[in-house]
Image (cartoon, rainbow, N blue to C red):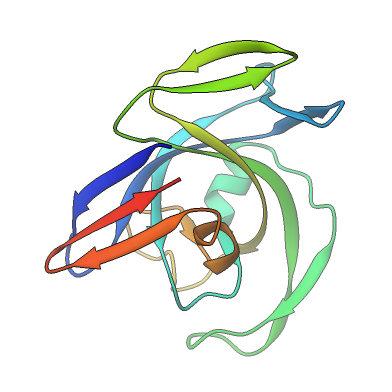
Length: 155
């Protein structure tokens, strides 16, 4: 199990991630190293029912939508947004072992999870350091502990 231990930054839980496209063959999730990837920041948002990525990130990674979903937030009127299947490499504090095709690989400080994220070009990402808003479905893949001015996210 990997974990992140960090202080809150301006009362926000912000983590380092890698975003890219999944290569999901034979039920094994791996990084498609032939596609663009980006190191960026993600905000852990326990009030969001799904994850979102910025339109800037969509453009940088040349992502192609694979569906739509309706949603609303405090800034915008209800609307439909595009959905994208991406991988999120959550950078953790220790090395982990992953099983790819029966072979164990040590991955330096990242735990990969596939996510379906909606795109947003709104005030949620305006003037912020993060480009990913990590919602409850992905947070629930791990365990989030909040204590004082710090948080622990274990996967």
